[in-house]
Image (cartoon, rainbow, N blue to C red; front, side, top):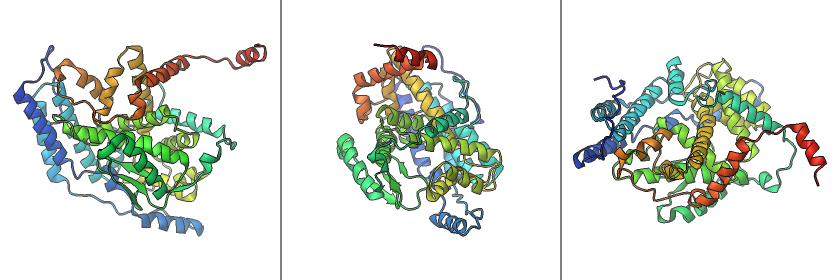
Amino acid sequence: MNVMNQPPPPPAGADTLPTAARERLAALSQRIAGAARGIHVLGALSWPISVREQFLRHWRRGAPELPQVPFQRPDHSAAREALCSIAQEAARTHHPAFRIVRETALSYIDAIDLLDAQGTPSFTALSQKMYGRPVANIRWMGRSSAAVAQYFVKQADRFQVDFRGPDAATHLNAEEVAHRIRAGMAETFGEQSIPVLLSPELASKAAAGGTRVRLRAGAEFSYYDAEQLLQHEVMVHSLTAINGRRQSVLPSLGLGAPRTTATQEGLATFAETITGTMDLARMKRISLRIVAIDHALEGADFIDIFRFFLSHGQSEEESCASAIRVFRGGDVRGRYPFTKDAVYAEGWLSVIAFFLWSLRNNRLDLARHLFCGRVHLSDVFTLSDHACNDLLDEPALLPDWFRHVHTLAGSLAMMNVLNGLHIEDELCIDQFRHSR
C-alpha cells in the first residue's frame, strides 16, 4: 500500500471507538513517540557557533565570505521504516483520530526526507511543502505572508521615535531571563516545571519543548524579550508538549511534528498579543524573517540577507543569527533557503480567525483542544467530533490568559469590533476637532 495515498473519509455516523480499536490507536500513537524520538529538525539544522564567529571576523575585516557549513545528516532509516508501517496501519481504520496519527507519521517522514536533502534544491521544495511559501496567499485572506510581513515592517518603521520607555532599553543577560522564566513557570506548572538551560549553540534566542527550555548563552534580552519568551516558549510550546505527553490514548500529541508548526507558532504569537507582550520590535523581527526568506528564494545569498537585517537596525550578531535562521540546511549562495519562519504570519492570523469564529459561534469550548497537545487547527474540529468522544484528556495545564475566559472573550469581542472598523482619516480628524 502506498502510504502517501489519502484514506477514504470515515463513514457517516461513526460511533465512539470500541475498546479494541481504542487500544490499537493508543499503541500506534505510542509507537510514533518512540520512532520520532530522535528526529529534531531544528537541532539537526543548527550551525556550529564557530561558523558564526568566523563569518563575523571576516565581515569586520571588510572581507566577508560565505559561510562553509558542515551538514548533519543523521541516519533515520530505521525510524522512517517504522513510521511508514505506522502510517499504513493507521490508514486501515477509517476514523478521524487514526487519520491524525497517520498524518503525524507522514509529517515525520517528510522531516526525515528534509534532513537527507540538506544543501540541495529538494531541501527547499520539501521545506515549502512542510512550512509553506511566503509568497503563497493565505487561503481565506487573499494576501500572502510576505505581503502581511511587509505591512508590519512599514508600521514598525513609522514609530522609530524613542517612545518605548525604560523597560525596552533594559538589557538582561540569559541567566536573568532564565530566573524570570523559572519564576513564571512555577506559578502555572507547579511540580511539573521543567529545567531552563543555557546553550551557546542555539540559533534562535530561545527554544522550548516538553522536557526543557533553552536560552542562547551570551545573548542580550530586553524586558519585553523575557515576557515574550515566557508567554511564547513556555506557556505554549512547553505547556502543550507536557499536556500532549500526558494523553492516555494519543500521547503523540506531545510531539512537535512539522504538521503542527504553523498552529503552534500562531498560538504562541497570539499568546504574546493577547497578554500585551508583543511589542513593535518583536513584530518587526518576525516580519523581517519572512521578507528575508522571500528575498533568498529570489536569489539573495547569505551576505545579502545579513546586510538586509543590518539595514533594518539589527546588530551584527543578531543579523548573523537571523540570516542563519533563513539558510540553515539550505544553500548559502541563495535560492534554496529554509522556509520555516514563513509560518508565523499565516499561523498567527489563522489562530486569531479561529478565536474570533469561536466567539461569534459561542464555541470557545473548542479552543481548549488547542492546549491538549501540539495540534493542527484542523485537529481541533476532528477531536470535537462525536466519533472522538472520550479519546482526549482535558489539559492539565492552561495559560493564565485562557483560564480567565471572560477576560479573553472581552478582548476577542473588542477585536471583532475593530476588525470591521473603517476609519476615514479626514472625517475622523474633523469629528475629533469639533467634538465636545
